[in-house]
Image (tube, rainbow, N blue to C red; front, side, top):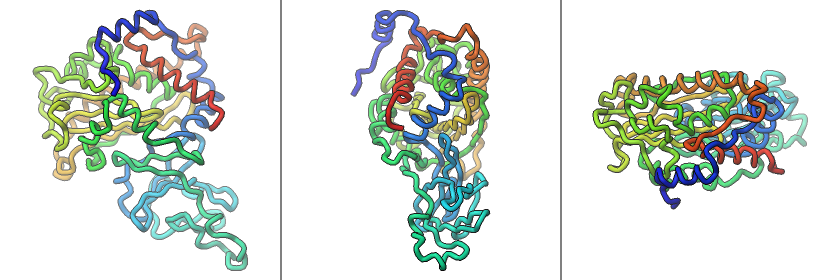
Length: 386
């Protein structure tokens, strides 16, 4: 396990490399060519968190999602498992499902020539198919996408051979919390969605990641958050420290917009995790926020160099949601944080094209860990395999 850094070790490291280090150049946030390369080398090559499994409870339920440059169809099969396929008919390339969500009874049918596919992706019917006995119904079935369920979500990978889930997705959680068991305590896969809000952010996905990773801005734009988490006013993000959770203020009863009491602690949360907030960045497009009575789970869908859709789930114990309890005070706290963060990102996006930002900006010591994210992006784009 990585040694938990103290404020002193963070400061000395910052002094060693200098107070200010460079960000990525401005054009990397605006250039469509770079964005297309990111689509290929990052979003189409690694694990991408796509759909909450509980959103597709019955056989035939489906959702389509955009991953990189590809539309992907995720559905519940007849055996109860989740499956994912490229949303492309193999006949003439028509998009199979135009709707974002829906339910089919037994199969998916292309609207162009009525090629029909089972929930397992196999080609089961087509006009005059019986007169073409040489057509392999599996070969010309829907092309599958790798799928792994974790934390109640379907994580997809478009690559022919996906990278290790443990060494990528889970490793980001371990690097933050010190052990994967620490997130298992929240039983995220057993929680229910109490609220979902979708944000259409006019900013590059990297600006959103960078914002989430640092707290240098917290005292400036997050008054409600720093009231609940006073240490955030000092400018150091809690996720900079392995295993450290930001403590609630002494007079704060719960993670709510007014600091009032929330709900009972989730059953698996350990004593040392109580009255603490943990933030985790799972590259390339997930943010997870852990508090004792609920979990806030963000998924980003980069749409263009200057537009990102962010889908945010507020997850609570099943009995809280089933009973119809009012979750608005806890939702309102992080909804305000999201609005404040996304407004800040949208303020930055136009300046990425400025001549003054041609070589990029700078990171102060409490932001230096963002430099590692920049190196990760650059290394991914430089890789030979997509």
